[in-house]
Length: 217
Length: 184
Image 1 (cartoon, rainbow over the protein chains, first blue to last red):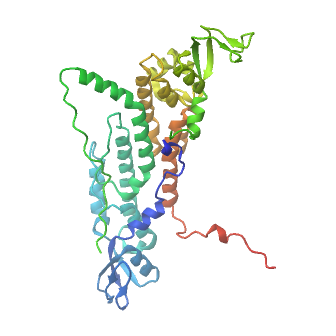
Image 2 (cartoon, each protein chain N blue to C red; image 1 turned 180 degrees about the horizontal axis):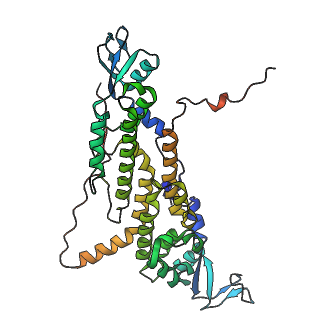
Image 3 (cartoon, rainbow over the protein chains, first blue to last red; image 1 turned 60 degrees about the vertical axis):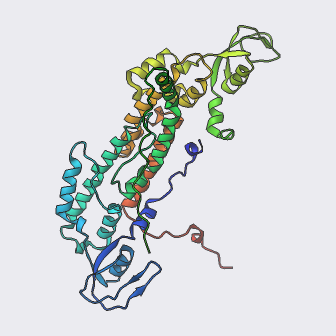
């Protein structure tokens, strides 16, 4: 298989995933007056002091670095919400909790640039790290359940960075399982079809790492 | 043939497999212990797999399992598949097994390979993401080439992620600008 010996199978670097996560809208509070800005991505409206405005994250970071605004932390980045999410993640056998797809990247950008705008910053930071660790462990146990019958894998609520982390590994692992367990499956299928009850197993549900909706312009 | 130029495939087929000759062969110095330049009918010789495969197609030989698939390895795999040192037995354990499977009369190879792979995968390879570098790399010399590929894929993306996480300059200086030009 070509993929087996290809050393550069990783398709996206973490920086590229971060770049794509910067398209999320966040709320800022500007401290200056500015006319609407026109970009290819869209127009971002008048900036009036002390009036909260929605802008993409990349623009917000740029404004913040020039000292022209302060961040309003997004709703999911509060201590209460994160504690709740962490408790739910730590439940045994629980699924992945719904979190914004770019939560790791957004959190990191905000910590780097907007320390003073987030209340209890260190607490929030450690909570995000804990959540990340727990989800990674859960992802790992999920990967361990692959077998010969794994034609497709479906996991809900996995964030973009986590998907990118396991992508090359999962591709190669599924290829390897297909190659090795094929004879076992063929033998099984022969045995089953030769017996009287020959009802085929229904095919597994469609493959989906969660798709991000394309942005409508 | 998609794998004709694949280096791993070429190296896999270099592995030796014992064969039993059905027809005598003249003018070949395969058997080091024979005095003459020929192989007699009924002789058991170790040939590289690509040669054994071709001769098998011409029904000149019949292939047996190489030593790396013998009873000793099977017992070790049954005992604890995760710790068996497959690389010293045969670095292309799985690939060779897959190739041998249709040619050899032994039907149990497929199951042996798949159970070994499944257990080793679950125990070792899935741990790459969360374990520290030391624990995960301790078993690196035991993995076959194929498993090492999987390990490397996981390792690369994990190190890239960790490096990104510790931060660093967003913009990197292009390497082409690195060298200072001498003012002539």
